[in-house]
Image (tube, rainbow, N blue to C red):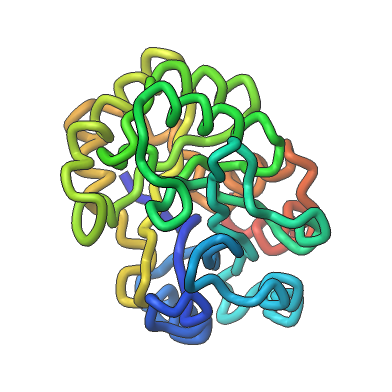
Length: 250
């Protein structure tokens, strides 16, 4: 299984990360990637970038060294199940990942987490649910996946959850992949890189998937055309902006 895109990474704009956009392009080229995404933290996180960061991502080239860049955000799921994406920010974003973070949403109980995550999915503002395997936020996997499928929102399996963050996620991630298979839905595999050396590293996601005979065709960010086609289903303009570039990979 080969995954050529990365839908989740952080730059120095999120101050607990350590690389620039240029750094990411360099490493992505070395790894033979097709596409990566910058998804710095939404405004509710203590170290989030100023909102102008997201509005000004338009200055970033779409393609450099034949590697495309998507302009995203890792939004925070709030206590009321909404997301911290200001209305005026949406037109500047190619997509949004929606995640729980302890400084924003204090862990509570399975029912509350499930309700908030489903509410976030139903806002229509996110296209991916971020690191739902976090053991600090137990959820009803099948309820969340059904809501995600109903709203065409992908479930993320996050490589950092196996290496640097959210210790104890492996069991939950395995159960999530099994539930995705059972309910016939789709996922993204992402690095959640906080330093450029990790961009595109989804090796632990792939290892888990292969152990469960999880098929590559359910991994939507396996290649650029597949992920851009998904964004087209959400009427995201980037799918058209990168259409000619992506033809080379068909």
